[in-house]
Amino acid sequence: MDMSYPAETESFRAEVRTVLAQELPPGWAGIGAIAGRGDAERFAARWRRALYRRGLLGITWPPEYGGRGLSPLHQVVLMEELARTGAPFGEHTDLFGIKMLGSTLLRWGTPEQRRRFLPRILSGEDRWCQGFSEPGAGSDLAALTTRARLDGTDWIIDGQKVWTSVAHRANWIFLLARTDPRARGHPGISFLLCPLDQPGVEIRPIRALTGDSDFNEVFFTGARTPADLVVGAPGEGWPVAMTLLGHERGEEAATNPILFRAELDRLLALAAERGRDHDPLIRQRLAWCYARVEVMRYLGYRILTQVQRPTEPAGTELGAAASVAKLYWSEYHVAATELALDIQGLDGLVPEGRGPLRAVRTDDPGAPNSSGSWLGAFLNARAGTIYAGTSEVQRNILAETVLGLPKEKRAHG
Ligand SMILES: Cc1cc2nc3c(=O)[nH]c(=O)nc-3n(C[C@H](O)[C@H](O)[C@H](O)COP(=O)(O)OP(=O)(O)OC[C@H]3O[C@@H](n4cnc5c(N)ncnc54)[C@H](O)[C@@H]3O)c2cc1C
Image (cartoon, rainbow, N blue to C red; front, side):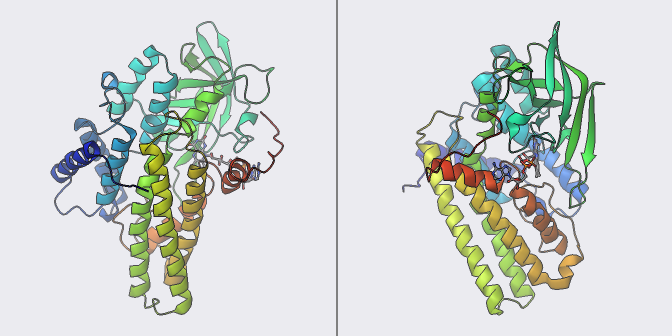
């Protein structure tokens, strides 16, 4: 496995390091080191503007839409450098706007849709959320029942979405809706773009285990969106949705080993601080964590090798390697954060200090070894085995695509 990066990405790395040195405040120790939640949020907003100003958002997009036309490996290098310094990758809605929707519009959007939306995603004027899951359609997404029908120049949308992360911070939603009521399964589903600020849309927060309300229910009651805001052909939104779900994995492969290694170092320090690093049972669990993070590094290399030498067209799934990686980090994280709570004992039940800004993956880089940080990470780790495809769904994918086991019967599609 040759993991050296080509020269052009290394010169880009030097450029990124210069920007980080110029833009990060003196004494920077990572976003987690900012004690107050409000201060950390405000820093993240300022930081996003700096990334935009320095041309470091959407770098793989064509210049005509505000990007720089760089390769996926350049994007990986950028994320590596951000992870290494503990700087945020963007703001809450950027995962959905830049990584998911932007990349999908480049593959499926009309020239008008690209011209209209891509620059506004980068500038932060349009902030997006993802309306796929419904109360009766999660893993079995094709069972969705939200409907849309054409009425003159508009789609009229009725139905409900759930677990819609950051909808309260967004002004647009991309959603899947059934536009052909006679079809079942994948056919007849359309991929629509819809403004949230209108009377037909209601957003209700859901309170999570952590006490935060990062996700929401979104109700559509006669909501309207223009007829031309369908991505792909009407009734043929399924492949568009699959492209969108495939746009995450290369960067995670690069950043996970950095983020999880930093978190493991904190865990080791916690065991030492609490005098638990001589306890043989704790040591055994720490050693298990160490081995897992190392394996994660090599799984990351495998995916990065695919990013460097793509065997599939851009935007398609990285397939089994991505499922293995997702399963691996999410289940590791449940065990590692449980260990952190065990090491703290009763103190772990009295959270001090803020928890993570986001519900995904590790706590914010640079976070102190506080009970609040570990409790937040412990609770969020549960969600890691659910979002972006549950552990059971990943195992089904591996059973079918790697082991060649017979496909299970599906209710839809
Ligand atoms: C933190 C978080 C953020 C999220 N953000 C968003 C978002 O922004 N937008 C959005 O659209 N959705 C979002 N989701 C929803 C997420 O995509 C769904 O929770 C996920 O797809 C699982 O669907 P479900 O919750 O309906 O569970 P279900 O699909 O009902 O699954 C329930 C249980 O049954 C198991 N199961 C289901 N099918 C099978 C099968 N075929 N074989 C074996 N076991 C099976 C599952 O693994 C799970 O254990 C988010 C979820 C979380 C936790």
